[in-house]
Amino acid sequence: MERYEFGSNTIIDDKASIESQYQKMEIDREIYLERARDSAELTIPYLVPEAGSNASTNYPTPYQSVGSRGVMNLASKLMLALFPPQAPFFRLDVDDLVYKSIQGDPRQKATIEQGLAKIEKAVMDSIESDNDRVAFYEALKLLIVAGNVLLKLTEDGLRVYRLENYVVKRDNQGKILKIIIKESLSPNTLPKKLADAIGDKITDEQKTINLFTCVKREKNKFSVMQEVKGKIVAQTSYDLDKSPFIALRFNRIDGMNYGRGHVESYLGDLKSLEGLSRSILEGSSASAKMLLMVNPSGTTRASALAKAPNGAIIEGSAGDVSVLQANKFGDFRVALESMNRIEQRLQFAFLLNASVQRQAERVTATEVSLVANELQDALGGVYGILTTEFQLPYLTRKLATLRQKKLLPELPKDIVKTKIIVGMEALGRASDRIKLLQFMSDLAGTLGAETLGKYINLDNAIKKFAIANQIDTQGLIKSEEQIQQETQQAQQQQTAQQMIADPRVAIEMQKQLANSNVNAGIDDEGNVQLTQGE
Image (cartoon, rainbow, N blue to C red; front, side, top):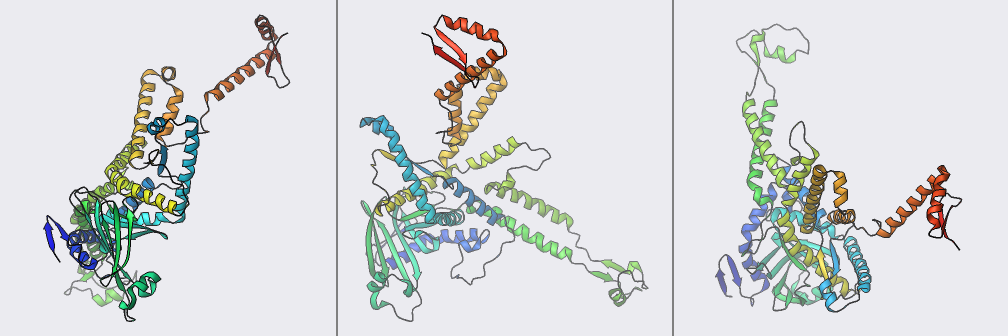
C-alpha cells in the first residue's frame, strides 16, 4: 500500500482495505480527539470519554459546574435559534425574477405560495415525529465541546457519531472528500442482508464485529461501501446533494480536516477555575475542621475537657486551651476574587444569563437588553457556518427523503428556492428592529409625537415592525378598505348623536343635502340613513 505525505494530511491509496485506510487517517485525527477529551473533562466528561471507556466507566467529576452549565445553556440557545419549536426554520419562496421571466400569472403566485406553506408544515411535522430535535441537541453539545460531529439521516431518524467513531478528509475549501465510520455491532443485531453477505466470517464466540463504512466523493456522486473483516458487503451511491452523511464543524479552518470546539477557546480559563475551585474547597474543608489544643504542662486535663457536657464546671485555666486556626483568610480572599473574575468571563463566553446583569444597585432594563443583544450578535459567525453546513444540507436531504417516500411532490428547482429564516437572518431582523425603534424614539423625542404622526406613514411602520419581529400579518392588520369603512361608520354615528341631541343640526343637515337631492334620517338603532330623493 502506498502512502503519500502532503502537509499535515495523509493521503491513502484507495485500493487498500477500508480498515487500513481508517487506521492511517486516525493519525491526523488524534490531536483533535485529545483536545476534545481535555475540553470534555472540564465540562461534561461523558460526551468525549477516554479511550477504552464503556458503560461502567466512572467518569471524573469537575470541581466547578460553570463548564457543564455553560455548554448546556449555549446548546439550548443554538437549538432554539436554529430550530425554533412550532415554527419552520426555513421558507420555500417563489423566485420573483424567474417567475416574471416565464411570464407567470401573478394571481397564481398566491396559490403557489399557499401550497408551499403546506409543504413547509408537512416537513416540520415529519421532523417532530422523527424526534430529530433530540439528535440536534446532542450534536450541538458535541460541536461546542469537541468541535466535530457526524450526522446520518436514516429511516428511523437522525443518528449521531462522535469524533472517536469516524475520520474525515476535506479539500482546501472544506468540501468532503472521504468519510470512514467505524461501528462495533453485535452479530445478532445485523440486518439479514448484511449477515448473509458476511457469511461464515462470524463465529459464535464473537461478541462484536467492526463494520467500516466508507463515503467517497466522486465526480458527481458519493459512493458508499461497507466492509467487515476485509470483505465488501454492501455498495450504493448518492447524488452530491442527497448524501445522508453530514460532517459538521463548529469553527471552519481552511486546509484542516477537522474543526475546533467552542470550549477549546476558553480552556485556559476553565483549567484556572478548576484549580482555584479545588484549592478553595480543600482549604475551606481544612479550615472548617475544629481542633482544641490543651497545654500539656497546664492545670487543665484533656480528658476532663472531652468528657464534660455543655455547661459543666471543671477545674482548669482558660489559657491552657486554644483552637487550631489556619489563618489563611487573606489568601482565600485573593483566590476567591480571581475565581469570580474567571467565572464572569466564562459566563459571557457561554451566554449565561448571569453575565447579562452587572452587579450594581441600579441596572436599567435597557442596559440588560443591550448586553444580551451584544452576546447574541457574537454568535453570528457560528450561525453562518451552521446554516451552510448543517441546516441547508439537512433540509435538502430531508426533502429528498420525503419525496422518495412519495410524501412530497417534486418542486421545480429553477422557480422554488429554499431560504433559511433563522440564525443569521434573525440577527439581521433584530438589528433592523433596534435601529427602527431608535429612529422612531429619536424623532418623537426631538420633533414631538404630533410631528411624527404627520410625516411617518403608519401603515408602512407597522409592516416594518412586523417583519422585524417575524410576525405574519395576514388577517392581523386591517386593510385600508376596513379602516375607511369603520371611519365612515364612526362619522355617521357621531352625526346621529348630534341630531338626537340638537334638532337644529338635523334641520341644517337637511338644508345642506337638499341641493344634492338626498334625504337624511335616523333609523331605529340611531344610525344616519341617507336616501336618494325622487
